[in-house]
Image (cartoon, rainbow, N blue to C red):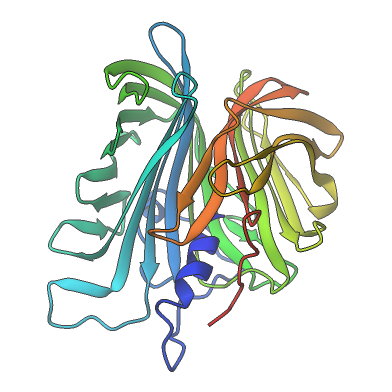
Length: 356
């Protein structure tokens, strides 16, 4: 979902007199693994998004997020070593209950000079000293030395990729072209270290992560105001992805969910089977934005209560993508226990879909 908000927010920055042609997302094809783990520069925007829960040696839980974006600006490459046609953006965040709030950092650069890039064929994205790479055994190495914290993590797959939608074609609205290519890698085993903002000390960590990779060229429906999204790893090895694209009045423009059972079977759920219901709200002391940080989620006949690790997990990326949203670690209780990440966009202001 993040790729779509990035596309909307950057569109005014890189608007051209003639709208450039980007590769379309059309049904009837399928994601090719592992080649599609790499970049797709012909599409308008793309992201690699990893979230997870970490445990320290003294059993203090932490939440983390790191995202690399690639945006096709529509501009032509020139003689410069910088490539103006591709923009690389990175976000990183750490939720540390001892610190009391989420800390985050962000960076943006044009592709070029080997300092910022997103390579095709296999995951290899970089922005200065931040990098995410995928090895031949399927493991990921993540490094982000950010302002006030650091992530040095390795993700090891324990399951095959979870291909979303129909072979990776994932609808995001009522029209067929309102779609993205989308797969997830849930239940990633995490090892490594973090530097905590509460102590400024590096500690070893273990945990579980979720990685999303998505690319698209088409904006959301014109009446979309934001969305609620969840990716969750359950204790029994199952995994859940669910989202709701919201209109201004709160009703669902589109919704979808996919539940993978411990044996690997995946069940898809349509718009009428997915319902996010706010239970408790939190108001940001910095932006005055109100977010429904505790939610009840229904998928088919199953129900869960989502509870935040800490309330203050607001992420302000207005210096890079222009977005202001809540994104945080949550627990799930109900028809299965688990840990995941909840993303809430469009609560600070309505997304200006297609605005130039």
